[in-house]
Length: 173
Length: 173
DNA sequence: AATAACTTTCATTTATTATTGAAAGTTCAG
DNA sequence: CTGAACTTTCAATAATAAATGAAAGTTATT
Image 1 (tube, each protein chain N blue to C red):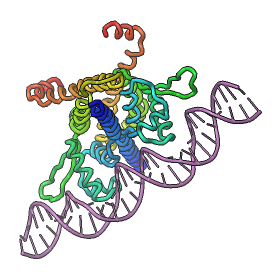
Image 2 (cartoon, chains in turn cyan, brown, blue, green):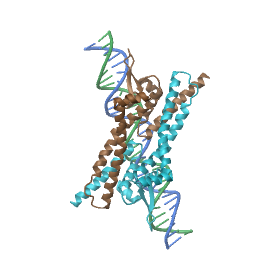
Image 3 (spheres, rainbow over the protein chains, first blue to last red):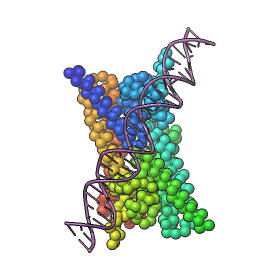
Image 4 (cartoon, rainbow over the protein chains, first blue to last red):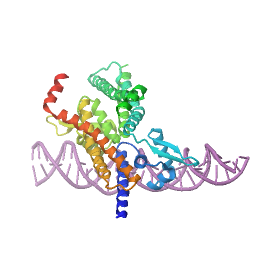
């Protein structure tokens, strides 16, 4: 009985990690990175690199690089245990915070550069025929649309970063 | 002078197509698919497969498969010119419509299956220690969070699909 | 029913991206 | 300063995903 329960938990955990990894792949996030994140999300304790390697059957280099990437994204943190040299890792577990961090990073890395290009190409001067007029019109629309969407992200971040509203957020929780 | 202007347009168009393609890659959409879409977005006329192949320097098979994929996503349509056998393609150019279609497809293909997994794994019965309790707690939170986000998409679609609100949308435009 | 004008399929090839692991780098205790 | 404990880097390799193109499939016309 106990044995069966144990298996069920391990199965569930594995299933979650694998699905989350697959989902990551479909969203342009490296599979291992998503899996490490998934593992840390459902693990109460912080994990060492060794433990991550063992749980996911990955190499030291892979673990190191993807943990670094997750920290660059600001969704995984290092912790230390007193008297130990080893580094331990924990995931951001607040989902609102997680969503904001991810949006923020994607905005910075992908949307902002795309906006720059859209601005550039849409500012083509003196369109000289129907084809060029349509190009300018369409890229301008796109620039405005993407800009508006991105602005929403900025506004949310701004709101969150404001101490007063943070207090407010805490109060209404 | 005219020559230089022409170059500038071609450059801008190429730049747009390449950037859009790169962006697609980062969001888990095949580069060519994003490029074809970009090309059709900024082209006023509908294009034949031959024309798409020539503009993007891609093979017939590649063009065929990605045009099909874009049609499956509902963001590119076939049109016919009278007296011609050939198929021509146009992109959905309304950006609200485009955003909705993309959200809808991603929800159907990725979020809904992820929800199914989350529901399954979070329903682990009789968690027997701190570790298992945390797993259930965390996956349940995730299930609710993702579910809520997905629901927003559904609501928007529902709203759009309603003929009355469509009329309303048109009236306020 | 034969042909011409197209489009789709899919086994093979090519390009891209992720992973490994051993060597180099870092940090700290003694 | 040295060495042990640990992490990072990166050239080589493996795994995955995308692209090709020729053959098969489809459809309209005569």
